[in-house]
Length: 181
Image (cartoon, helix red, strand yellow):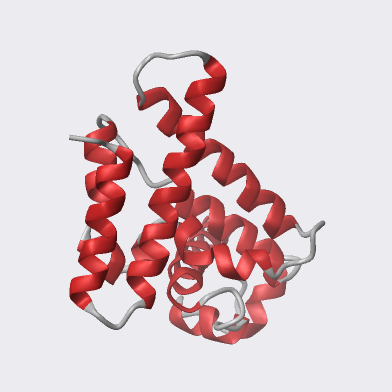
């Protein structure tokens, strides 16, 4: 069997990380296996361990990949996009914090996935804090943490309920709480 070039190996690795980022958000950390990820990436299962130490190592990279999605604009634009019906319907392309919070909460306290998740929460709250009106650093941090809690919680609940109207009401209520009119 011919070996792939270093360049192709890099491309394959990036493809696996991207596919994993989507599948983990869609199905959860434990709802998808290595074989599923490799198959969806169009690669063989055997190549996985040449690229990653284990599934957790891939999850950490996939989480970083998902977090790297560009979020621009003011607080109103960020909130409108985050609390949209589209975001609720498409977890595979949405925020990994909302998609994976329940799974990560069940990880061991010292896991690399939990550590990376924590960094992502900090980074997201810092982004929100920079978009909020000027106030003391402590007040801005409190408001950013409240905002991220509201945003993530609303998306999780809107995805979980089986009533589309209630889902929309949850999103609207969260919008009003984070960006009062």
